[in-house]
Length: 132
Image 1: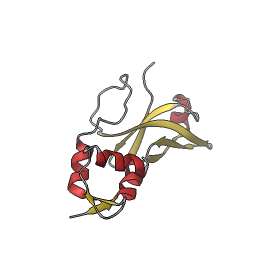
Image 2: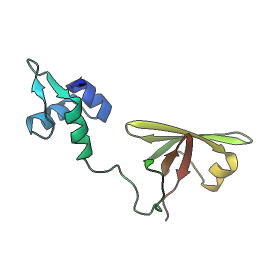
Image 3: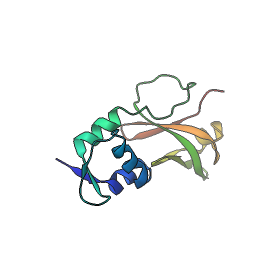
Image 4: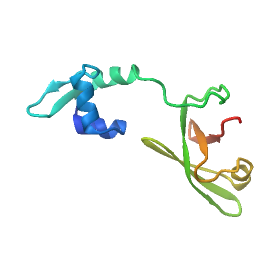
């Protein structure tokens, strides 16, 4: 079975190692001592911990759809040329990059700082904006 160090879990979850240690000390995340401040977290225990967590942030205004891999975050980059646009969304701990037509990026008025959701279906990334 896979085992992880506190620092590995922290990096995977985008939190500090101190936060992971605190979760272990509080009993929220099962772990075993490995000497000193080091703890070992069993992969199955980590998976169980993650299943119990709240879902990722999604604006209530998003319409329901079949895509389950949705990443809501802040647009950090929009590069447009004559035909296409490359849009980058920072959705910690993920960075999602989508290539779309320039027309689509213009219609959505995608700019750095805008809240957007990337819906990933198969190999396509669809960028959505919350209804206002």
